[in-house]
Each structure stands twice: as C-alpha cells, then as structure tokens.
Image (cartoon, rainbow, N blue to C red):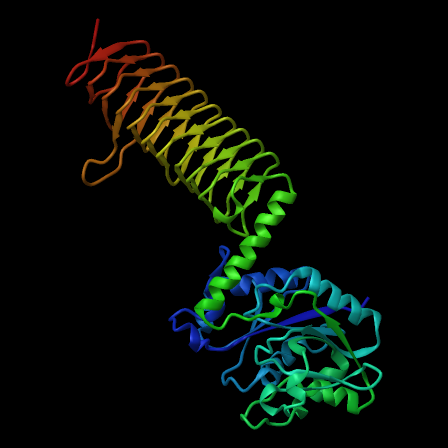
Length: 445
C-alpha cells in the first residue's frame, strides 16, 4: 500500500463572508469548517496534514495548534500555486498526495476512502472526484474521449457553448502520484486571470500518456464549498441532518428531529430520548436511558445514565447517574451532581459538588459549596458566597437538613445531621447533629 499524505488548501480570504474571521474558522455543527476537513483527512491517513494558510493565518494557527503542519501562501495565485507551497513539506514523505479544499466540510470520509482506494488500485497519475449536476456551480467541465477516458478539464469561463452543456463537473479534489506530481507542478501555465490552476494537471497527464481516473459522486452536495453565509447556513442544515440520522440509527430517539440541534462533537447513549427544541453542544456526553427536554440546553457536559433534564441549562458540568433537573434550572460551570440528586425548578448550582441522594428544592442557589450525601436543601435557600471582594466556600455535611428560605453566609460549615430552621441566617459553623434557627441562627441547647 502506498503511503498517503494530505495537503489542505485554505489560504483564501473569503471576502464574500464579510467577516473579520477567516472563512475556514466559521463554525458548522459546532466545529470550525476546517476541522471537519481535517477530521476527514485523518480517516485516510495517520500522517499530519499539511495546511496551506494565507489570510488570517495567525488565527488559524491559534485555533488548530499543532494538529496540522503549516505552510504559507503569501500571494493567492491559484490552486496550483497553493499546492506548490506544500512541496517542501511533502516531497519524499509519501507516494500519493491527496489535495483537499479547506472550505468543503460536507465531503465525507467514505468518499475520501473510496477515492484513495481507487487511486491505490490503479496506476493513474491522477484520481479525481467528479459530480453530475444540472447546476454547474461555476465548476469546470470534465471532457472525456470516445472510450470514456478523462482527457482534460475546462474552466467554466473558458467553456464553449457546447462544453457548457456538459453536466459532469470537476470538484477540485485530487489524489496524485507524488513522483509524477512534484516535477510537473511548476510547469502549470498562467491562466488568463493570472493564476495557476490544478485543473491543468489533468490535460498534462493525458498528454504524456498517463491515465486519469475519475470517481463520480452520488451526492453533489458533498463538494459544495462555503463562500458566503447563506451557504454556511445551508451546510449547517445538511450536517445536522446527517448527525440526526446517525443518532437515530444508533438507538437514540428524537421526538422531533427538525427541532433537535446536536453538534458533531456530541455523543449520546442508546435508548436516550430527546424531546423537541433541545440544543446539545460542544464536548457533551450523554449516557443511556436519559430523557432530555423538551427545551433543554446541554453544553460541554457529562451526563450519566437514566438522567432527566427538563427545560433546563447544563453547561461545563457533570451529572452522575439518575440525576433529575428542572424545569427551568441552571447547572453551571464546575458543578458535579452526585448519583440520584434531585434539583427542582428555578434552581441554580455553580462550582459545587453535590453528594448522592441530595435534594435541592426550587428557587435555590448553591454556589462554591461542597454538599454531602442525602442532604435536604429547602426551597429558596441561598449560599451567600461573595462578600464583595472574594468568593467563600460553604460545606454541608451528610444528612443535614436546611429549612426553606435559609441564608448560609460563607465561609460556613453545617455538620453532619444538623438541622437548620426555616428562614434562618447562618453566619457561624453549626455542629454535627445540632438544631439551629433564628436571625442570626443560634444552636438550641
């Protein structure tokens, strides 16, 4: 098997996006456009892709880090010129070079695998992707001879009226034989637009007697690039549709797929049910047998099995098995709710560890707290964690009972099994097993 290396061309400015952000960094289904392309490249090779950058290169590097190897195209002089910039990084590394565009997030890994497999199986100088479409999308036309062999590609602006009627389009995705590519790439002629195009390589190969293979796509949507925000929104819909179908086929129930929004980075276990108008985002993992929604937002969270999140927000938090939340509650950053925790409506937890079996009743706020197992926090309790300058911690030990409307003024500790009367303001530590109430709360002898 030939070694394969990947070059991703992503130096364009993307002026039609009308954005300060480089085009390839605009998000689609929770990931930047370019990361979809990189993830697909990883499906066909384990070597680090070479990314040709130009406009917004610093932001691209900041976003991707060392996921890729970078080369710079200082002047955008066409696709042939862009790939030439990668020559020093790639020559001698592999026998085959796959050239991809950085703005095609819809191209699937299955298509790339088929392209590479075809190239590996044939002694072709080039294996290319083509598509049949009534809409030319300004793509070049693929010209074949009487036997059906690809002869050359003609850019749309150079097509004759007869050639414009050809429905087979060049998609711009190629797999090259490396030892043929590198000596010939500098030989591309300058186009009328003053650029060097990879499409010229096809005619160069056939003129020299080399074979050019073509894989015809089943779904032309895969090779539609993102050039403006209408195409960005369209690609978002296509990718989210794929995600929803994959989830349902894996054993997840979506009550209304059209109003379920799941990022490409989210994982969901079997027999979980997602109700309408739910947004599952970022690095979220949801276990089996959960009920999510309706009207839930879960972002960058880890949710165990058999949990129920009803019309609530969970972000950057961990829910262990059997947790029930909502409706209208908010679990915020660095919160961890232990197994079987119940959190009523209009509650909020932030930067707190909640022990198993604890009940947080409605209209309560628990912030910067450590709460033991089987604690009862009554309706409307508040941990007063901020003194105007610093955050302080509240500790509530196992089995404690805190009555409704209680204010816990941190730093403070409630001992195991202690009971706090409703409406109390606790400003000092309460010993284990004690009963305290009042404003300020005092321990009853």
